[in-house]
Amino acid sequence: MSPSRKIAHLDELVFDNRFLRELPADPEPLNTRRQVLSACYSRVQPVKTAKPHYVAHAQEVAELLNLSEQLPLSEDFTQVFSGNRLTPGMEPHATCYGGHQFGNWAGQLGDGRAIYLGDVINHRGERLTLQLKGAGPTPYSRNADGLAVLRSSVREFLCSEAMHHLGIPTTRAFSLLLTGDTVVRDMFYNGNPKPEPGAVVCRVAPSFTRFGHFQIFAARREIELLKQLVDYTIRTDFPHLGEPDRDTYIAWFKEVCLSTADLIVHWQRVGFVHGVMNTDNMSILGLTIDYGPYGWIDNYDPDWTPNTTDSDERRYRFGNQPQIAFWNLGQLGNAIYSLIEEVEPLQEALSSYRERFETSWQTMVAQKLGLIAYEQQTDDDLCLELFDLLKAIETDMSIFYRKLALISKNPNSEPENDINTLMEAYYLPEQLTAGYRSRLTRWLMNYRKRLQKDDLEDEQRRITMNAVNPKYVLRNYLAQQAIDKAGEGDFAMIHELLDLMRHPYDEQPGKEHFAVKRPDWARRRPGCSMLSCSS
Image (cartoon, rainbow, N blue to C red; front, side, top):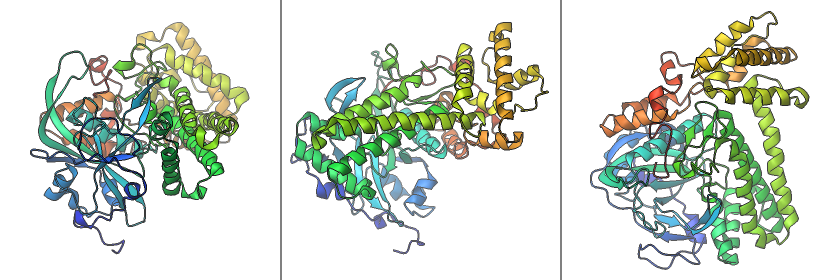
């Protein structure tokens, strides 16, 4: 097929399901909940949906697949990506993995409500895995039904694409469809289940392989199977490392450590909180994966987590994400130890995570502040004081940095004018006591002096800062408003937010109402301030 010719029918997609050819399958054909031993995957079929209905799709992902512009709007598209029809080459299956959940080994987990359709090779020769989330039970569903509801599907669809356009490595969301069925969910696990509209999201990524895929075979001492999976992963997703051997395993682990460090720096840059950083939710490619009880920092609070399950321990709070990623990498290192049988190279790779995170974090903070480079001697104190100020009173993180870009380096600027410039970022202006204002004024004076050391004019600095400090993020209350409207059959806000998040760093005149502080009604409303793993 000519790369210039768009695919007009889904049967033209080219599949190469190498994973299924090269790795062992579950020999049991029945789709019953069970422990799946000595296998990487189980073949399953998506459930048939009653009356699937198109809600939205990401045109950029359609272009990755080289689809014609009209194809996602067709009835056949709805049938295929709701799970009702398989095209030639699709081989639906679910994979086996384990993981640590909230720091404790959980044993077998696996794809409980995700069903792979297969790997498409696009017109550029890229491998793209298609996966339906919410398409029915698998052997790994435990006591669940494998289905998904509209609210969680809207959140995943919008956030996947928002993260991509923010420049953050992520799995992508291709389509969002209603199934026409109802699904019973107890949103906060508090004994109040209710029926909700069912939905399916098609997710797309070069690979959905997680740390937990390797952990399960190490835990079961299925070392030959572990080696098979590592070798497959290197040959498929890391071919530049060469043929698998002991040295390649070490180089591979180090690359995973480095890409994970880069990912976490991005999360901290924009105020994203994953909410459930279990090892089974960590991507081997350094992608953001599994959008469950995630959230966006409104007022800067390093201790904030959106996950109600984590409300006491706050293990996965915003400020702890770098440490959790390091711990999770340690568990991956433990899983592949039997292939290397030496601790030192694994420890060196883990050290590379710390080094990469520190240097990347400094670069990121310098960019957020409009500095040419991070100078530790002066900038350590400058940043520590800034973070203390942001935390001391309710300060909107996104708005603060956008307004900070408007501060002039002119030494004759009036301190009171600077504070007025930042005023929009404060939730409770009465918290700006005389003592706080004095402290903020001193920081702004030191910041201005620091800017004067760089040969960068105000306008160029603003452009630099605005390129890393988004004006628009998928604030929790915005997603909830879109969910509320969708529940009434109005999908306009989903499309509006999808379009908005395509250009998160631009001013977008006329859309400023999407960049305001969290309204007071959303402060403690479910879906806006607190979420569960059902979210």
